[in-house]
Amino acid sequence: MSSATSRASTQSAHVRQGAHVTIEPSILYFGTPVVLLSTENDDGSANLAPISSAWALGYTIVLGLGAEGQTAYNLARRPQIVINVPGPHLWRRIESLAGVTGRFPVPEGKPPGMRFEPDKFGLSGFTSAVSELVNPPRVAECGLQFEAAVARALPDVTGDFLIVEARVLRVHADPAIVIPGTNHVEPAAWSPLIYNFRHYFGLGRELGFTYRSQTPRGPASQDSHTD
Image (cartoon, rainbow, N blue to C red; front, side, top):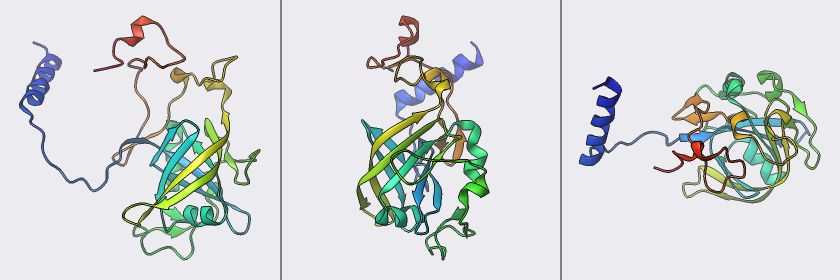
């Protein structure tokens, strides 16, 4: 028996025996996309903030962000936003923004060592691109950019975070990831940056596709779309 087969048999045995353990992790980022949020400051400049709590339902994108940060401050006054979705190759630039905030003075609830930085674009090396329907700029290097308006923003149950529902007004996509002649993103050409328990990942190989896919690849790719 090969080592891979042996490991699979052992894992299957553990599943059959219900051999899970109870843990209390400090965070629950079990594999979520990273997005860069562009908002407008009081002086008309742009704030840029990475977050790892975002999901989409139709043309609504739900965001989770710190209630004391500059993004929350800006959205309470100017409810326009650009949701920029980076690829894995941009992770170092994303990380350069992890230890800074556009809020001054730095809120007490921020992690130790956090410092004020008014020029997030300059620090990270990202390029600002003019938006078409909202004031905050887009991030030119990001393969997907969603101009949006905030429809609702409410505190979460702890009061530490803000849950934002943003209605997407316009979608910008790198032509390299769009199927020519369509409005579809080519999944094989696009990989989002994934935040997995505070580590950065890209996507692995394609396993299959859902029955609702509008870009199917044929029967051979469908083998693994369900467990």
